[in-house]
Length: 601
Image (tube, rainbow, N blue to C red):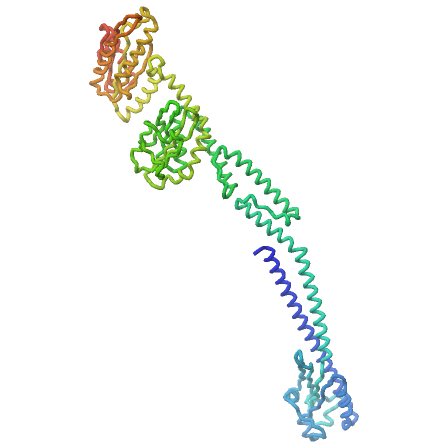
């Protein structure tokens, strides 16, 4: 129900009840006033009759009272008049010549009680009359001593004066007043209704429209406006103008934010903007944190933790893909990754989301197909795509990821500069860690790996074989054949080491012709055997110099970590001692470290 209808019904009902009450009260008051006036007239007439009868008694002319009574009866509005003689008077003087017995119960009641009885009679369509019965009581004053003639006591009722008078003239006056009052009340009611309708209730249409408009805007409908026909009021126009400004501001903010974060303004645009700006603020705070990360591995770990907290998923992995080289790397692994992503990630290559809940998006690289997973790719630049892989054993655990996959996109979009910065820094570091001539790791990488191995050895106790080697009399190559041949020799050594060792082994060019090898998970008894095999392979290679060729040999020192020493840095130093021992024995030899070498040095 409209506000105007409610208010109109309330006001008109109240006015109607008020006027009905006034009308009813006026009728009652007029009727009571008419009855009071008729009764007063009847009482006055009765007093006149009483005075006339008293005068007749005093003058001794009671036999002429009928003339007096007939004159009174002939008065206007007098319907009938009669006298009633009490039993005491009848007992003393007899019943008299006239019929003066009690006519009804009222006469009897007044004779017995000595009280006056007056009644107004007659309905709306009947004659209006007043019935009055007044007791005539004995007195003993000096002017009128009833006791001198009657055998009664003072105050005894000698008789009753009864009369009936018509009051139709008062009734007619009462009706006329009622009709006039009714007409005036109706005119007043109509005037007030007209005033309320034309001057007051018109505002309720505006108030109702303003309320509806405000509620619609509160619920997110920024297209709501107050109709033009109700905009005569300044406040209504101001509200419409305010909503116009609000909508323009919301559209501008949504346009600016939509390129950064996902804005879903279908239900409540203000709430959507608040959620979007909140996410943007969180992402900016996180980006500031990411800038403080020293290396890419820390940044990737923080990114995985961020998505883990966002979606309440424990297992979040990050995969990096280079579209140009098509190289795929697992850059962060929360748990043991359950897919063969390194052989080619479908999400990274296609740029499409892979979702285990969709039959057309099943990943063929998944090792355990019963796992639930969602992999969301995002292109950082032309040379890098990041895949956020979220995995869970629970079927519905990834529903928040499926409905909020845009959060991954907008987060990585905001962090793309930071990720690219860390990737570039990692590439620069890789360049510093790779020797361009041999393709082997440099001394910087060796220092990093020895630090990591030292930390891991305390909890894993994985054995390493440590080898140090260089070419016998390498300076003669540069002197006799030139630097190009010397460089080629270094490349051949590097390739020989790469071909003869495992991917898990670490091969480092330490200086000009000096190399260090860390053999991962190597039996201490086999370290020197590996060194001997490498020495033999290199000794059998023919190096080219101009149109001819030559053969060179190398000397190798070997040591076992942590059997020889718990500090791997010290083990590298021991390997150098063993290599120097091989040199002192003429070269082309692989020597195993022994503590006696410490005594000779």
